[in-house]
Length: 439
Image 1: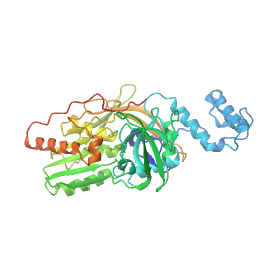
Image 2 (image 1 turned 90 degrees about the vertical axis):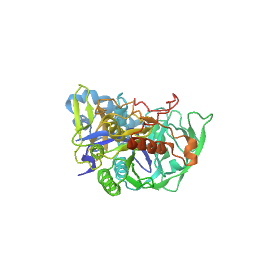
Image 3 (image 1 turned 120 degrees about the vertical axis):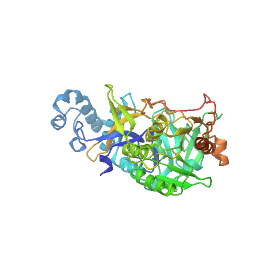
Image 4 (image 1 turned 135 degrees about the horizontal axis):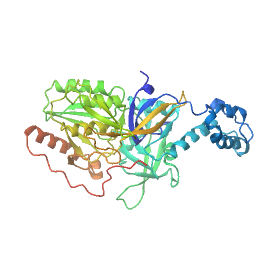
């Protein structure tokens, strides 16, 4: 089935910085058909005088012709009076769509043009792409790093969650829309870009120069550790995440591991059906994985499949501030059912549902339509999931090649296996960024 006809669930504020890549980030959602309420680009009359032409009138549904008259007049004025002609009609059309979406105040609502949509699907399905390799938030004053992709230029440069990009190649980005900043950071493999970073806790901004690269992100990476613990890292919930996870679990379980660590750190989401399928591998029978709560109070149940092969093995799930959307759905369900302990820091807090509407080969529009709730009906949006064992990964740890979160996951898993007390969580400092509100 065509990816664009499938239900997807993508992190609301994240986006991978690709060469020519996607603009909305991973969001949560369902795909819907084109509504037909917006005139197609072929129906625009670029050289008309600053009045509404008969063609424009006929291209506009009758019940909103009066409402749309100022739009068409503005369109015509631009074509008649703007100093730099010819005007790019496609950019005008995309700008109009984005302008409408930006007036919506709840959740993430955005437009992907056809190229961005292709890049998004490529990333979700593990195909090569070019860029710095980072999830970013474009909903605030500055473009903000959510988290780097493993082994990407962003990761090697030490970019961290919460880093704000305040300048690109020496040009101040204050007042520049974060999506425009993201576009400036895009570029082909081998080219350089210098980002000026404002980091919480640092006295002054600092520059980071990155060389854009071709990045391949496997959906699943796994190994049997020397201590007898199976380790699985799920990087994104792409098209074959369930199949790749099942293959990894088959191989690992055949070696009779003591327990399992599922690493969802820096996993920003993916397809909804994959989130449900992944959760199903660890839950016995058919159970609620996540609820969708609509504005009228209705709750829609999304059930597990009931075909899991790792429903009994002791397990721990690793999470961090960049675990979002589908990752939070999986981790929240496993935590609610007592199936796994969560180790790390509070997750991103992406729990709004976007309905993704295909625009007849002109891209897609995502509009917030509901919220996610865990099986115990905990709200995810703007709150995130609190780990059972709180452990930070500091910049010093990163630079020293240490992973105290993974160490704590092993310690926690061994306590579960041996029936001994779980390690006490570290006090949660107030300075830690646990999630970024979505406007």
